[in-house]
Length: 99
Length: 99
Length: 99
Length: 99
Image (cartoon, rainbow over all chains, first blue to last red; front, side, top):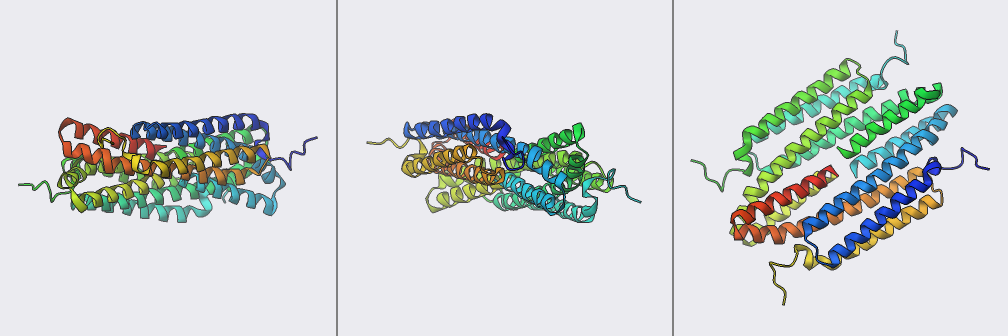
């Protein structure tokens, strides 16, 4: 049986996240092939931008799941745990915005 | 008297946020002066990057306040309100990451 | 008379850049008013994202002008000057991408 | 024998770029394993940010090579080709900044 409090927030959508990551991996392998085949730089760059966007979408999905589960649970539990989860989420958001 | 549930989350740090925005406004005016004075493009660009970073820091501060107050309160209240606040916060984070 | 080689690359579009910066300054003042008026955080964040995008557009405009003028001129002149201008432009692009 | 004008600009550093892409591919596979193993979301997010940064570094490397070779060559050739290469590079930079 699953204990809601010990599994990470993205469990519900684990399959969806794994599918997206598979696709990102394929995109990165596609980039390797493009460089090996001496594809024109600008075309490679267009694909790098698309891959970065796909990776950002994974991050936003994970973050949304995390807020919906871990953060909501912690907020309900209250106390130091709640404050710490918010701080942790804010720090992760800052890393994403800056990356 | 202030009702915690009706005031926006950033109230506690309103003065800090306003101070940062004042500084950003000064940075943008500085950019105008640089362009008027025909400052070398690369130096202007360095200042544009600094200004963008300062603006992002304002956003991250506002978001942190929002999560700590509105989102935590909504999570505790529970129900549809809670889900809606999380969705709203996730959408705002997505806009920030993509901007 | 204007000496093409001594004026910064954005001179031709100086008026357009100054107009955009004026608008960004207005947007930042708008943010200050929103915070003073206790506008809902999420609405403030939406405006911060719009302001960041406007500032990025200024940077991309300046960079395009810089490449079209200074970098092209330096490439034609050749030698160390050319290499140095490319390095300088690449560094500015890196700062933009990371900001 | 290599004709400088028909090979893409990143040829000189092709090995370096391919090495970086291999590493990014490994990072993405690492992300898949983390999600499969139910690693804590925040730790996954930290690794997503690191992967995005690595991918951006590839883009900046490709762009620097492109400016140093294709754009410099086109600038020297002059005419419409020069203008078109600059426009193309500016558009690629805009996509990177926005991704």
